[in-house]
Length: 199
Image 1 (cartoon, one colour):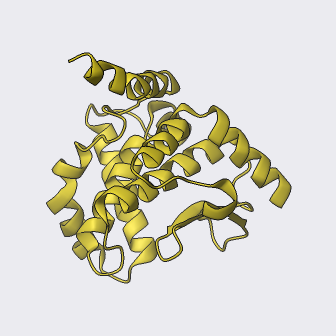
Image 2 (image 1 turned 90 degrees about the horizontal axis):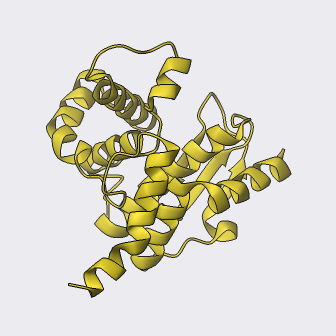
């Protein structure tokens, strides 16, 4: 199982436009990611797919719960967004629930967790604001999974930071609703220095 997890991780890092953009942005922010140092394939309890351990700056991938490459790509992207936030914003994961909520909102919004295709596969579709509701719900569940607080308290914290964090698209510059969007965002990100050099 460990070898399959490692192979899927390698494939995600080499081919996923989401992961490649985040890895490049982290390198440019002075937080270069090394596969052997910053990722760990492990067995996890329950249905959790992965996590970011801020104390060790390591991403845990739950090899017993990730069986498809597309799922691995989303988990790697989701956790790299936390890692990017940790790098650029010095998130206080343990003492500031607003910081945690903001990173969970950003991860759900930008990782593809709430893409139309994933929501249809979960039999969730409909409302125009559905993407926002999906992001809100996933962020809420993530917070409740890692902190012993009431649902009401978690909802209040998510609501307080939702608009500003939902609209923070760094480093993508947009919400990548599809792999194609992520490719364009990656291309734009890679060309940004060329653009600024011509000003």
